[in-house]
Image (cartoon, rainbow, N blue to C red; front, side, top):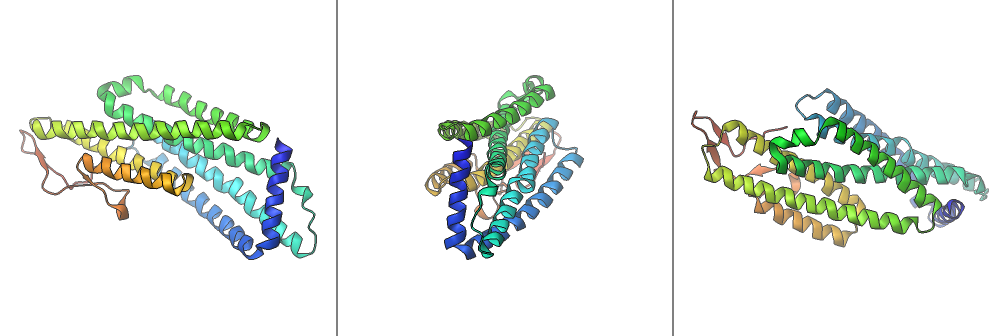
Amino acid sequence: MASELCTDTLGHLSSLIQFHRTFMLAYCILLLLFSVVAVLGNVLVIHALWKVSSIPSNIKKLFLSLAFSDLAVGMLPQLMLGVNIAVMLSQTSNGDRNLASFCPVIVTACYFFIFLLCSASFLTIAAIAVDRLLAILLHLRYRELVTSKRVNMALIMVWLTSGFAASISILLTVGNMVIATVQFILLLLTTVAYVRIFNAVKYHHNQIQSQLQLQSVQVVDLLRQKKSAMNALVVYVVFLIFAAPESKLNRVMNMVETTVEDVELQWNPKKSAVAHMRRGVHVSDNSGMILDGMARIGQ
């Protein structure tokens, strides 16, 4: 299966280089450029996450894992593919069309890292969705049940599962069908998790409106959980933009917009990373403290 994958991939690249040379040159430049951007951007993200102290340790570990997998994509498969295409373009421009030296090691290694890191990113995004759902549903029991040790074990399982998925994709003929099935299940699980998150947020929002005597600290915590869930949703939607077909993506985006509006948040497609509460919503406690509905409270 590995040699078949390598031969098919190499033949496809050879045809593109021969008949669409200008396109492949532009593609190569973009790969190398975005490789640098991915590395620098994710190094900054990792540094910021490592230094910040206001983010809970569990969600910080999940986002660090996601940033690390994206960093590795820029350093390994994306850079390897760009360099390989550049070498192929240079080699064919000199009249040498024998590209057999790229098989089986170079092409197979490149696609193994692609499968490994994309699977790790997908599984981590699903884990983030489940973690945010548990944080909202479990309340005070969250810290008791979702411990640091269990999060570490979950991350180890994410990377081991990703390595196993990448291996069967390379070695087995039916590997791609298995991976596609697992990805569909994870996509469904993540979508259901976010629907449950916003149903829970809507319930808590109604409680705040009907029980204004709720302690201000609890109000702040609920608002923080709401914003945290919204930010995690943005990561999921961005991933869908690059991983899902356009028709499926449109359906998911419409569902997300409807769900967000149901919990009285305003959907802003130009600033989807920030959720703005509708004006005129104030919550006060007995001490006279007023929480403005437009206040941005980070976690």
